Length: 98
Image 1 (cartoon, helix red, strand yellow):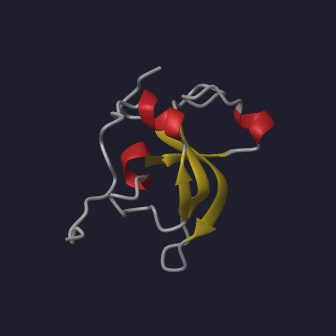
Image 2 (image 1 turned 30 degrees about the vertical axis):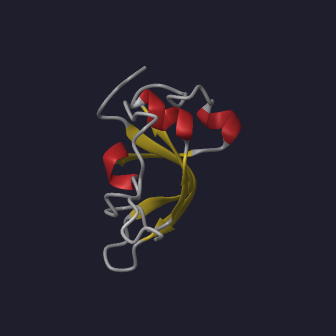
Image 3 (image 1 turned 90 degrees about the horizontal axis):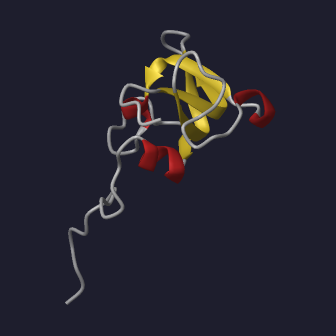
């Protein structure tokens, strides 16, 4: 699939108390609008994943922190389908051992 502007499908959701908008939570997957499957091949209806067309894939990455408050896991296969590389780490060691 390889769509860079994918939306999000997630196993759970949370609602922001300030503005009342729902956001993804739990395990998140990349989803192209107009399709019934994720980038990793899961069927949205069989997997019971909720669609979030107003949330972009980049916004749920833990590195961005924008809408990633409720995200517990990011699908590795969807992340790879969106162009993430194997050697890219989501963290860096700031205080290495002596």
